[in-house]
Image (tube, rainbow, N blue to C red; front, side, top):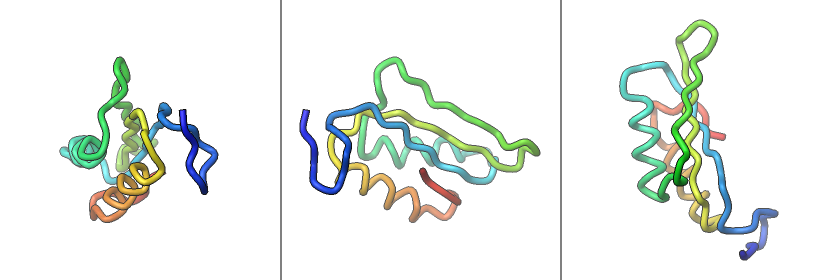
Length: 89
């Protein structure tokens, strides 16, 4: 395991990435495509969906094995650049 400056995380590590947007047909696929462009999903982990109370919005959580802070930075940059994604955590 290694740690990088500017982070308390030790890599590699299990890391959940959550993106929120409008509950529209392909939102889950959009999020997965962006995340999987940079990382593989954790073995045995599924993608979790959580609709809002009224069903207008949805959050998609994808758990990956993060290998570095720069990898996470690239994922979040791509997620926030996507017009369909309203927020990424």
